[in-house]
Length: 165
Image 1 (cartoon, rainbow, N blue to C red):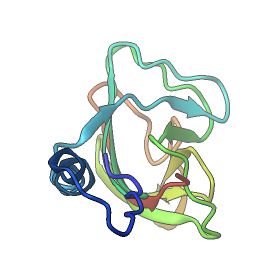
Image 2: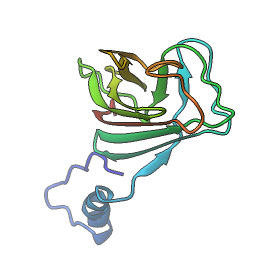
Image 3: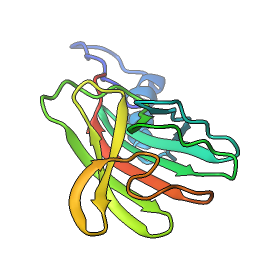
Image 4: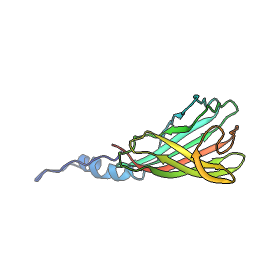
């Protein structure tokens, strides 16, 4: 809910409703429950299909600061597509001149820890994981990286970023 506050005028008589909107409601929005949104899952190759899997997102926005969390669980009818995986964020990123890094966690056959990357002005995040258990270099999450995905695999992405608006 937070927004740019109004400009007050000298000698203005302030009503209770105005104070509630400009001060109380703004303050309360910083402690409100997170807002749910539905991320979109795309790839750089053949399109994936969620099937009976789940994909949820939620965020908290205070001014232009956004905290976002995406949760993906593969189902028995999930089609993984091909290519690099991307997930939409609720607001476009600011053109801040640098990519932002967050946390990625994949629970599959093994547990994998990686990073989430959001580029300036972007609307999608990408997860990066080690190429293999014996190769610490990272690459985009794909249908086979960091491992071949299966039903019940879970991906969790969390990031704090500055929105464009």
